[in-house]
Image 1 (cartoon, rainbow, N blue to C red):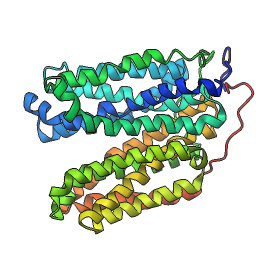
Image 2: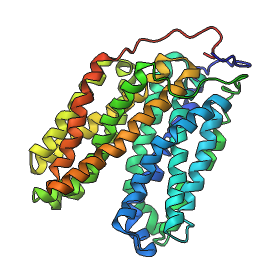
Image 3: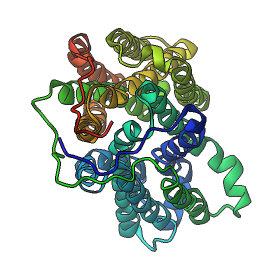
Length: 402
């Protein structure tokens, strides 16, 4: 383990609120830059003459980058520390996200989207790695729930208020809207340096590549793939599924309830984090409910199908928080970023490719349900891993930063 200079004492409960606000604001920017793209896509497409595939890539390309950028994030954490990594990643994210509002053509739009996704990917392991350096051990579960609440709220905020609220205030300019959503993140990045904790830096290099000998790296990653592929996949194919059922007129309502369920998931975890985080039974139950809800979405029709999809979204949101909260609980502060990055690498790679594979199958058969069945098949394959998770805390070496 690496030795650290000048370990600082953790914040008292009275100082938890400012740290919690910073974690929440950073969490919001894990998703807002990605999910403002769908409501703005028609306007961007009209001006830049995008094809359907390129329009879809505005959302799917950043998701792929969430996997690609996880290892550079782990390397940065090992070299410059989690707080510096988070601040750097947010600057990179802003360059890409705001840059989309300044691009002259399709190529630079896709390049900016990739840069934005790369920055968000570096942010992901930096946040759990920062928790042990800012919070008392008994606050780690709550800290995870706080920034994940920000992330899931960001999904709803970005998709929900962009068109009805923000664009009318900006003369319906998609370019100005992207700039207004993006630039405040620079203030959050600067504010990360206000807490006195985490001023220590590593005095020698520490490992940053995924530790594939640690079974949690692959197991949590595969289960993250279950949560992500179900959420992103059903979100993507909801319209095709309802159209096939003759219920396309319910699409707006279905997407509203499906996405707001993620908000309720995050609020639930703010209340229950200390009880549920670190419990294998909670992971098993929410993973199982996710599968059951997805099965209901394709086997039922009308409002029952929408209700089942909403149950899946709620369960998958809770499952996501439970899984992301594991690394800071079971490893030392130096190993947290490494474990988180490895799980994100596996999880988001699968969250991108499994729904895509299902889409190819649905195109081939002409049945939208086959896209969802592909995701269910994968989920049933990896679900037994939840029963084998070892979530016992490992003792931290005396030389490590608490």
